[in-house]
Picture 1 (tube, rainbow, N blue to C red):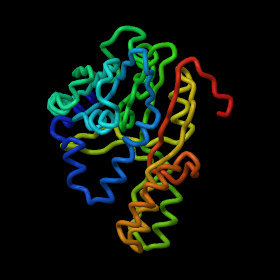
Picture 2 (cartoon, helix red, strand yellow):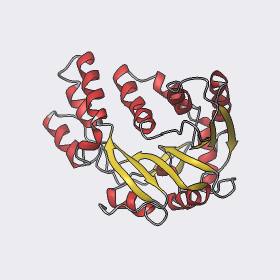
Picture 3 (cartoon, rainbow, N blue to C red):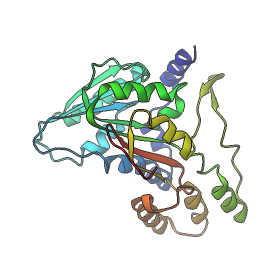
Picture 4 (cartoon, rainbow, N blue to C red):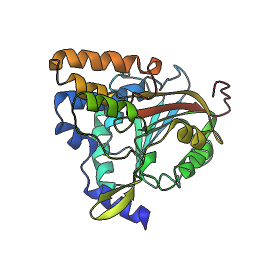
Length: 274
């Protein structure tokens, strides 16, 4: 029943592009930094064919923003996007027509039951998806099956230490900003139905991955609490430069500062630092 409710709600929700267009310029820049962070970790071979699986591709914004930066003429790339919303997949197909030099496919599918053979993909991207799944571990298990032995996974998801965590609350108290609700809420209400939505501590996110993948890198980004405070004192142009600087140095900043996690993981990789 939960999956059916999610599917019905997703058909009615605006696409990510529609949502971004309603944001102010600084909110839009902060949101697009997510795609920038993911794109930094997607690497390609100059000779070998590379296949990318984008889970929860929505309207194809990641496809458009990231692949616009790749030199045209490369014919060794295959992109497969899956989503549970048929309406959003139609938007994604339209966006893909502008990138006719890349082999693209779109599939209506459930992230917890991927309709692919074993060891098909080199890279998987999952951008702001696992927080909506009733069982995030089921997706990671499916990725273990669908990703090749040397494959990589890049995931972003909300952090429990972000705008609703202690660091943000301190900043908001200093600047007399309205505080957010508890960061451990596990549901949001859409169309009168409770749907899964949660954020993750560092321990929770690593626990989901470690049975199947070794984590190469994990850090927080999207420093919304800082941006909201600075926006009360600085011109937008200066704040935009600060956003770009902080996001580019995100891996070096404290993990309790960011709104989101980025997890970069690989099969058959052991990270002794965790």
